[in-house]
Image (cartoon, rainbow, N blue to C red; front, side, top):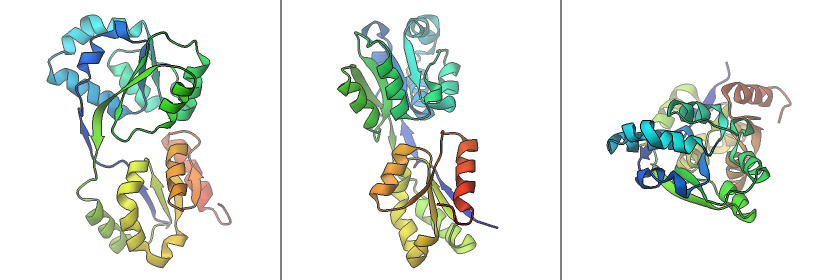
Length: 237
């Protein structure tokens, strides 16, 4: 049986900044952008921490719903829907395509508010800037290496051996684990098929000189599984 190793994001700490100050002034923004469920979760936690949940439900939610709320992927859309906001753009699949979608709309007079992590990609902000679409980023969570990543990788390799495939879900997952994977794999690293959840992660793999055998067509388990299956077939690349 083939062994497939999936490497998700590093451990994440929420509420890098308190976003409530900006969320409490929807009149100052043209809409919201969420590119990950974690960003939505961080906003929820900050609202709960400051006992602002009722204010959100009674007034702020409705005011934000009068504006555009852009999201990447169905998982993020589902999380945003749970806080009472309607979404658009979820079918875009990744930040680059969402940026294209936003740029195709009428440019807002006010900036879009973008709650994000410390290691956010620069593709979306740059594309919006190039099109003259104003945007303000606010850091709401921080990505840090999981303290057990080296131990967990050592355990996997000692029990399972060299994996047939390793999938990365983010550039940070790659950054925090690649050195350990290289040490554990040694000369056998060329046997591994490297897969990415999306184009941003694929570019990060390529930047490290790693061949990308699979990039999921959309950020869903089904699309990722199909891509890995094709990559692992004989003579597949």
